[in-house]
Amino acid sequence: MSLTERRLSWDWYEGEIPDNAKIDPTAYVETTYSFRFFRSRLPAGVEYGVGASTYLGTMFDVGPDGRVKLGNYALVHGARIICDSEIVIGDHALISWNVVLMDTYRLPVNAADRRPEVKRVPASEFRIAAADVPAQPIHIKSNVWIGFESCLLPGVTIGEGSIVGARSVVTSDVPPFTIAAGNPARIVRSLTPEEMKMHAA
Amino acid sequence: MNRDPQPNVSQPGQWADGTLPPNVQLGANTIITGDLAFKRFHSREPGALRIGAHGTMDGVHFDLGEAGRMIIGDYCYFTNAVLLCELEIRIGNYVVIGWNTTLADSDFHPIAPAERIADAIACSPLGKGRPRPAVAKKTIVIEDDVWIGPNATILKGVHIGSGAWIEPGSMVTRDVAPRSRVMGNPAQVIGEAS
Image (cartoon, rainbow over all chains, first blue to last red; front, side, top):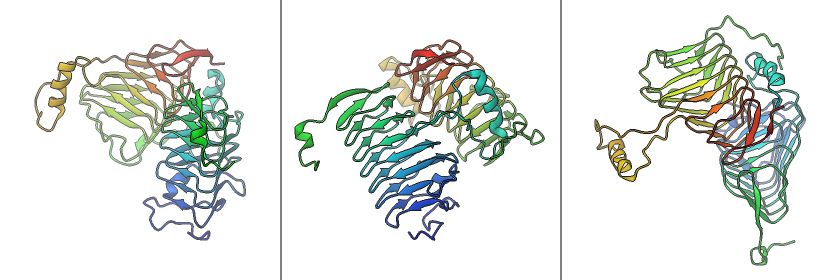
């Protein structure tokens, strides 16, 4: 795919790749539907590395100051990426279907503060709730594997080579080369020397 | 982005991708999007689904059984929620429901194995006209100003009090007190929503 080609010949959705999406020619975008709620105003609102790919079900719900970066060979098989600051997905990371990566809750936790923001939704251009609540970047380091329907909450870092089990809700950082699972997620164990064999440090 | 808090009220409620079933009523400026919104809408109740004004129902599945009834208040904002309703779901005003969250007011099948065999046969292509065994159903109530995150599940009989905050991925099996904050599977109170 050339960078000048903003429509995809195989796309079922009549959309375009946004101008500020920097996509490596070797990367794969299954559908531009993934950019339906993409409204980043940064020069590189989304970046795809060499051989990175996003498939149906992936949605870049990215606000004006949000930036998403997919590393080389990162595979996103259908994640809701809610980003108002920065979400970085490392090289060779595997993200399964219906995963939620959110660096912000988008709305105030206090109901009295939330109501006026919810009232704004039907008048906003995208009909999206987008209040000025703090965003905390999410970092998924290289070689991470995230199981299906998991949620990563604002501010979470998943260390290199770690695994997050299916349907986990990750509320705090996961160290490198560790398996975490559960809702809320807890550390299950570290990877064994046997499993670490062949891993180039 | 337009930050005008006064939406255009002159527009009647509409489903952007099809013709609404006759027993669905939408308030002014309410928008439903998605080809599959009414794919599994089977309710025969008059006024089966009523949604107030200024609602945003983006990619929501209104899966109502034959006797299902659902009422949703004003200014509700749901993203790709799956609403499974065999009996009754009542949702207040200013309620937000996140992406891929499921509400189910029924177990859909009986607990007893023998009854489940009968149900599997009744539900099969060979079971046309066979009566199905009774299944547990209980009304779900969600009060005003509740926020429910993405990938959450709300089970039958749950009553969520006003202003509560349900964290992403929560499995809500019991009532949630007003203004409390819950998370986990099963969902437990982790604090106040303030």
